[in-house]
Amino acid sequence: MLGSFRNPLLFSSLIGFLSACSSKQSADLIVHHGKVYTVDSVFSEEEAFAVKDGKILAIGTDSDILVHYSSAQVIDAGGKAVYPGFIDAHSHFGEYGQSLFSVDLFGSTSIEEVVERTKKFATGHPGTPWIFGTGWDQNKFTGKAFPNNTLLSQAFPNTPVTLMRVDGHAMMANDKALEIAGIHPGQTLPGGKVETEQGKLTGILIDNAWRLVAVKFPKPSPADEVAWGLAAQKNCFAQGLTCVADCGINTDQIQAYDSLQKSGKIKMRVYALIMDNPANLAYWIPKGPYHTDRLFVRGIKTYADGALGSRGACLLAPYSDKPAWTGYLLHPIAHYDSLAQALIHTDFQLCTHAIGDSGNRVILTAYGKVLGGTNDRRWRIEHAQVLAPEDIDLFGQYSIIPSVQPTHATSDMYWVAERLGTERIKTAYAYHQLLSQNGWMPLGTDFPVEDISPFKTFLAAVFRVDAKGFPPGGFQKENALSRQEAIQGMTIWAARSEFEEKEIGSLEVGKWADFIILDQDLMDVSSEDVLKTKVLSTWSAGQKVYSAQ
Ligand SMILES: [Zn+2]
Image 1 (tube, protein in one colour):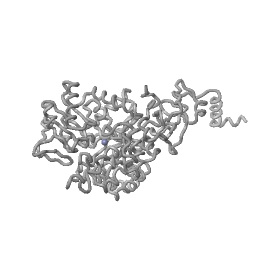
Image 2 (cartoon, rainbow, N blue to C red):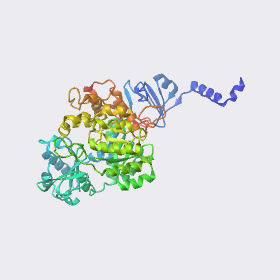
Image 3 (cartoon, protein in one colour):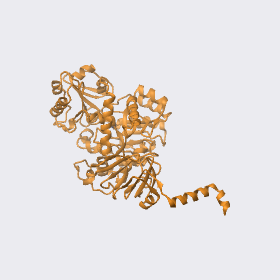
Image 4 (tube, rainbow, N blue to C red):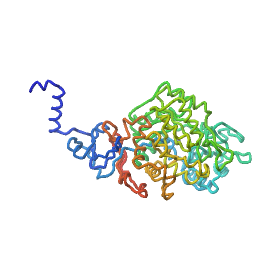
């Protein structure tokens, strides 16, 4: 018998067995009595898990975990639903943070209201050298036409003021800002539009045109960047978000996130998509992807076209509400081809904003040429909003990943038929059809273009209604996702779209313990009650980062 113990494996397993009988394994945190949606490959439910060094050590039934593990910190989830922390696969986290410190124009119903809100902000922030605002939408104004800057320039003759449209694709600049940027009537440029009225500038600058003003913006101070990041993070944690993709940022902002995360100020995980410009590409392509516990840099973001709301989306046939106008591409087609060629030989992922059916076709074609067939490069098309029916299969053919934002469907539904007509709209916001192409699909919000709430994403994805419950029965309901698909889209599929599915996105042994406890269960809540869901607590790497009062 003794001879058996010469087998070291058997000997050590016996010791392990004996010690398990006498003492429990220590953990840093135990969560039990939960309805834990692990979002593993079979969407299994468990009751409890143990966390050590920020990662899931074990997961199972209450008795599995409580019998074998001990911890000074034991959380009774009270039978509530526990999900992996939500991941927003397409946001503008930095811009959102900044928007919290600028004029809030969301929901304005007239240009007069826009100017009044801006004046009120200026009174409360005297001496601001350049006033920024965001959130106006002319589709909410009487007549739905673009406004002009006359009232704004009268109110602010000496201070530059720039107010972004809700979609981030159009800006209203006052005369002072136009003067600083040297914009003149009749100015033309590729991929953008300088609007005029009877030969005069209106102050409306679309797509590449507003970037002419943006290069004149004062550089934010490091203190501003910290304040913006902390404010954005606070709101995200309160909504159960533990990771966001920040879509299209520069190297200095990526470096700022890295240092804020390393100093412990920012605990949000960030998938930083590098903005396509020569300086960023020259820095990152030779360097290659960058990865820490909280910062992932592996993708390049470019833009095919603009957006439907400001009629910059590139369509195959003219807009239904603007004869002979098809929008535009933001770069020549050769640019997309050469970017795809350059990246196919690297580990970088290409993520391209494409809204119109023509914009999408250009990108599907450019990707297809270098990808050649099915693959695991996970190149993404952001929004994939309006598609020619015959192009949809290209997503599956080349394993191109549509990265979609369900609330875009329920925000745009009020006016999008005017832009597209009744035929083209049938293959717009076609999320169910798109999901079937690859069998997985990340979801996001595009905040601050939309609200940051993942619950609004869930509501729009599953029920295809907005926060008011409109329309009864849902908008183009045939393209709804199931509850499980929506949850997967906000967790494991979002992680996969960032190459982080081995680290986050599900509650499985060895992954980061990023999780949330909710007061009601999204898997059975009624559509009327989805937005009443409260996040009771949010945890990142086993640390509580938000708690409901
Ligand atoms: Zn975006």
